[in-house]
Amino acid sequence: MPKRTQPAAKTKASHPTPEPLLTVSPRWLFTALALTLLLAALAAYATLCLLFYQGQWQLLYHPSRATPLTPASAGMAFQDIRFDVTDTGQPRLDGWWIPAQPGKKEADSKNSASQQPASQYVTATVLYLHGAAGSLSGAVPALLTLHSTGINVFAFDYRGFGHSTGAHPTERLATADSIAAFTYLTDTRHIPPARIIVFGDGVGAAFAAHLAAQFAPAGVILEDPNPPARQLLLADPRARLVPLWLLQKEKLDPAADLAASHVPRLFLDVQGDSARTYALFNISSYPKQYFDLRTLPATGPNSALSSTLTRFFDDVLH
Image (cartoon, rainbow, N blue to C red):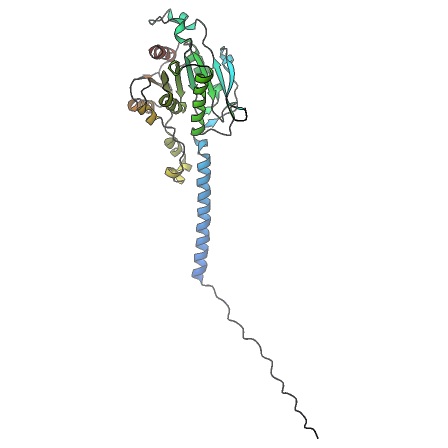
């Protein structure tokens, strides 16, 4: 008889041993939180530095696109000039050519000691570089004073100002624009540098000094030069939150150019910081002149400024 096989014994079901719960050290949590906050703070600070680097021009320049006044508003005949043509044939800059009034110098010289003939200023031209605010419209009174001396005047808006192109001004662009204006006078109007006087007002004084050092015109006039960019930037509390020594790209300081070149220059205190103007006068090379006109009438055909300009023109335009 076959042997009966005993059924296999049922084995007891086994359950997996539960793994121990992971515990996070409070110290690790604190370190991770601190690192997260630190990275967030660094990212925010880096963003602040980037915004300052890209937008520092807003602390130095205050351009306007509006041009409510033109030379015609003050009774001056003028031509609207578009120049500095790009590769696509589009002019970048807009300016005004204000021709000398025929016979003006001759008529004015009858009551002066110089008795200069009217032909003295026929081809001579003032290249006017305006300040950091507004547009060329704000310079109409100054242009009228220059025009009253019987000299040609060429003035223009930097990129970002008035009808000139460009999103906003910078020192690099405004310097290039000033060079383009000087080149327009010499190459297009065929006026030799010895018949050009560069006039810089406010921030324009830095660009005027650069032109004088590069092209040696007949003379350069600096009226109420602006403080250097660093001083202007530090006047804003936001600039003290960033490493200015690393991020500053605007200089606006004509000191080096004034010390290097020997173009005759005239420093004028009209309504600015006399200490700044006189400091630049002291470091400037010769020949140079300085006049403080703050207590005297500064605009108009018969103003102290007009008389001072006429004497300077007579000195340098031989």
